[in-house]
Length: 502
Image (cartoon, rainbow, N blue to C red; front, side):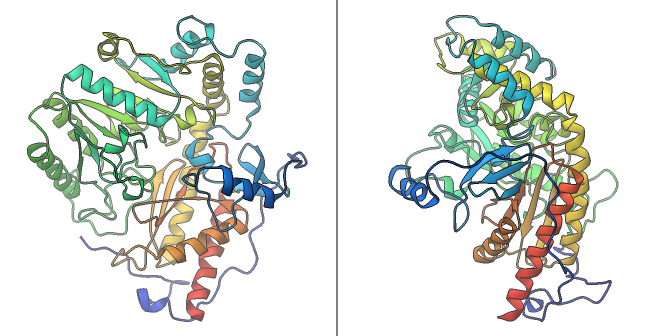
């Protein structure tokens, strides 16, 4: 499979050499800086410590493992819907949503009002007593999942939810081995770290006993992939030789999955976990039909199938409420976090009655999971998604933005791939489309910093930190998308001028 669309074209002109072009003179097509859409929200005046004192406290009293973005870390003061405000009152369009966590908007009025009412009523009881909100929320949440996924165990974070899902899979099947994709992120706990397969998250301590990784079916960076492989408005620029209804890339990746089953694990396994679209790895999508075949192979081995919906759930993909639905599968266990609480710490494991019963044979307790505050927040988030039509907005604005970003891919040789579905988008940066070598980190960082300086906050991801991650609050508008695309366009233009000047 060939890697590329012929290189950068300007104004319908001729092909310009990939790497060599980067040393040529760059003529900008952007004349003015993008204009930020208006916002009628006025933030409160910042009244806490000075920036310098905050930075000093951070260095002295906050764990160095908790790293910050940007050369000069942002000191954020307030948020409203898709906007963030720093201590000086500067406004930013948030395209990363607290790492794909703010689903319905910062300080969404409905969610804020719900938690304020509950704060005055009841905070905490633990699960040794009943309180109304856990039953109300469990019924509301499970009504959105297909049969037989009707039993929920509420936890506090995605790592905790995936940790519990692993435990339940092993208890239910009486098997131990679990398979995950390379490039996957399923948490940072000692248990889930065995499933996470991104080098920088791996610490030099024993982990991963009973966990095996399999080849990631990445149709852009992997060995196989073409121009009609993935469920996205934007396909790769790689050539495709497949005929109607046949995907050679999918067939090859399934063979690799079978090879893992035949060589790396016992004849019976506990399960297989996957994200419907990989999040931390940069919105990586698999060939259409892959998960359906993989689920069948796993179940033949006695394993259960776990869908990690921590980033893809709650309408973010647009066409469906849950990411697994885009693959035409029904998992045995679903894990939820991040957008479930719009920034409030909560998570969930949803499964079948039979699998849930396996955990009830002995004691298992969670002090804060399902607390009154969390359940009220979770219910308000579901209401906001429905009332504000945020799933439809994710589809409409996300598709629009993907198609606009694809124009930048067609223009700039260093934009190797634009991919995703709904408001879960990745922009993979390369030295050139033919080699697909990651763009050097320092160059990506310059583009990233420029976007921030122009008022747009985006994430980073990928095995080489080479992919920009766009996963905003689901309330953003097409005008916001236009602004963001124009800012990214300007940042790319500036980068090309810097390279040409060297």
